[in-house]
Image (cartoon, rainbow, N blue to C red; front, side, top):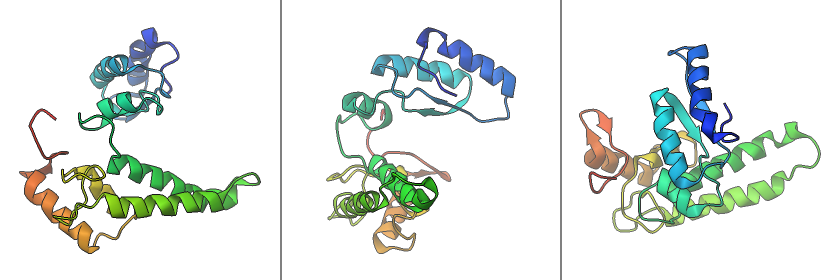
Length: 188
């Protein structure tokens, strides 16, 4: 459901939606970048009380500091692999859907951007020393979200670097059959 137009009523509206659909259905909210960072964090807490499964674009995509502060680690502005991957996915799927979209679309341009983004991810997201994909370009810090690279078909699951990443994440982030998101300190 869309939120953000009337922030003072958003938690109430989400609560009403949860009551209407019941506890067994997933509830997704999309703020279209309507909130400031602190406001988005407060809203996320309220939405969690209603078992919101997905909180889409709480801050504007133009707010790099806010976006980095909510979705990623606390290092500030970085080129995060998971964010770049999702941009690649959007472009890849747009190219595939282009024939159904009619006139006025630019699949050739999208394909060029997609291919450039894929090359950047493969070159800059892989830590040279360990040979595994990291959470941000130029970083050596593991991030379990890079496992989506195989799921989203950016690379094959049996790619040498992907296999090394899978093993490293299992070894360093795995805990009793579960996987922590980040390596590093416990307060991330």
